[in-house]
Length: 420
Ligand SMILES: *Cc1c(COP(=O)(O)O)cnc(C)c1O
Image (cartoon, rainbow, N blue to C red; front, side):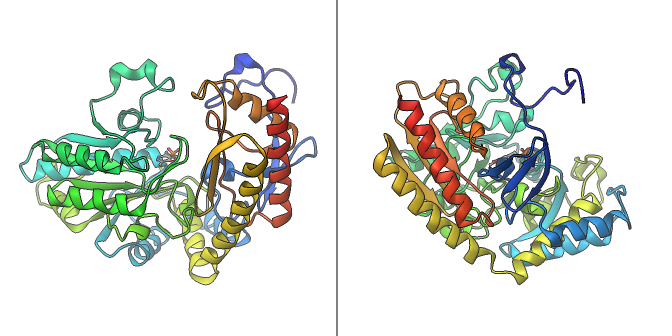
């Protein structure tokens, strides 16, 4: 390949002329670049790869399905991979979540959830439309998903297009009651349709962790005031937090559940929004104007569904959560050793997600420590992408003890150099 690439990359300032590695293949937790480097993927290629790259069972399922049925319209048509997947999800996920709506990314799963919530209230003759969100949330980059997410430099240009929401503060330790009170006040307003939240861990907001007890109480407040509870488990789902869903740890069943990223083990773009019977029933009618008006070209793509079915087979037949627990233990030890000798604070962990904050003056997203660390990690063949001054790991569950050792050493080196 010669000449300048015409590709406009996501979340990339091309003017900084930073190197863009060319990845040729991947296996487990390792990426292999065209120039022969072996890079440890310590963030699961942006939180999507769960078991490991190119899991043989998922690869085989994709190959087999691709030769059989590549794509078919899903409005008014169906196919076996989607039927099997929907039934499996119904079995695996909490019982009240009876219906499965397909889409193709976390952002669209969230858009669908918001549209379902509004459709539910409208079709019941109630014009509730206000959405309540949590401070520091992230729900995706489409307009609706940005509207319910934290406002900042990454969406200020689009501010005029974003709709108004009610925001409750993040439940920091010791200030949980403030969050619960704010949620209760917001839910008491007659026009509140739904509360959307990332259960237990706010990802893009900086790997901020709150307790299952707060999650449980938030769910109860919504139920008490007839406000729909939307759990965005796009990142936390599929074992990330140590359980299949983060909601499980709080014994919480949402009215609407968003899943994407790890749904296919991270191999193919696919998402689902699951809903309870009352939400489906509110759209069920002989009146066509009450149907759910949403579709995209690749809704329930058969190849992606086959990949998800293989992922579920792995969940059913292999000890996935034991692997997560083992990994989490090793990560805890590694980060405790690093925290003991470096200038970091707020060490925290939830399942396979572990994080701490580097002590600095300016800690915002555009603070220069993030890119400096990122470049340092890359020079050490590590895919670790700090969020501002927060260094975190969210590796594939198959990360070996040896590669975790390399990750620990690389973080130690980078922290030594940042001080110098
Ligand atoms: C990544 C993410 C999304 C958006 O998913 P995409 O597939 O990138 O559109 C939504 N919600 C949460 C919590 C996420 O972490």
